[in-house]
Length: 502
Image 1 (cartoon, rainbow, N blue to C red):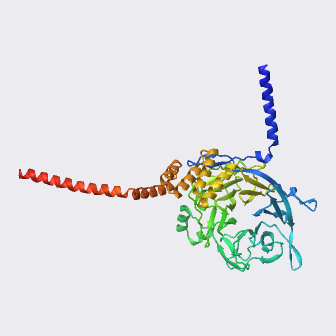
Image 2: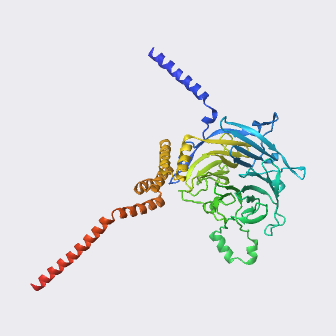
Image 3: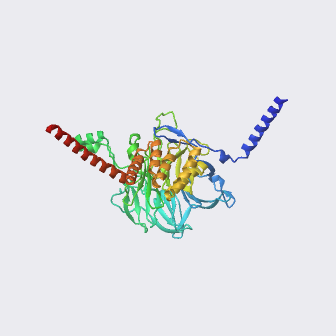
């Protein structure tokens, strides 16, 4: 009888579990292989910081009762507030979708195939990017038509930017703007295909002003040696070494530009800086103080039998208000999140054709703390939302960014409850302790995670504080030692004199 009861109870529990799992939305079950790199370079599995909330294709939307059809090779994604723009490149159209956070629904707002110019429709041709400024004006990189369109909120043309009459550009070079951003003063910065002089900058009137942020040329020791001993004729026959070409650009809340590039050799990955933050004169000022420089995966394979191998190649970047940023890796189909110091916050995603994985990711953007990724091959937008784990990390960063150091430390404590081996939580608590002038506690946190640089800062401040606190005792001890030394010398002198007289 007891055995029968036990069997019936087991069956009941299994049935209850099945019903419970069925009742959970599929998106809540979606997980991705998440990890970060530890101090010694090992991959450390972590809880998921993000989960798949929605998977959007063109077939999910209708216009006037008719499906708009799936996206084809979409290359551009831009999010402003709750508006999601998709540059549906091979369909030669712009698709605008709005997200209702209260109902968790997505609504098609408009599908545009053309604009009116001089009273006649002018169709888009392979548009690759779009930007909406604070005033609601829309800028489109209409790549196939070799132009940038400046439109108002209703898609009426304000201005058209075409190839400038610039002597440094080759005469037969096609003007193919692929990515663009617009700063607070209306200046347009665009990445143009086959232009390796940096971003092209246009003023608010659409006039070309300069190139910005051209990458440095890196020569190996062998290159330098052969160029020193080569004749002029041999130098002409050698391959030209030119600056690398950007492949994307983003802008943060302060107006700083972020760029990505992927045209480099694997051995160059450590110094080529595939993600950069540019100041007003185009100098890279991105901070790289983490264990590992922000280049994506540090360990990779060149096995030709694997479909996804080689170094990470960033194709886009998006910046959060707390100066953390996320880079999209086309090679591995992954998203790499970094804080303002270059420390890894999270890594998630994988190559594949299931939800939360990517085959040919082309663009990334954010909606608040949510992350949206566009995949050109699967022709879909994946909407990721934060898990509790991801929320605690971002809140810890936000509190620290806003000077609320105790609150930041509390959030890191919540992170450690979910992931006790998360290095950045200890470093984050060390930062908070340092800001609160708790230097000894900060030293302990930094020492635990081998953060030598910050440990040195904390130690220097702790030493200064200790000296200031004990300065009176130090003076008394020094004075005492001085007097004792004088007395000792006097005694020794008297003793010697007495012996000599005797």
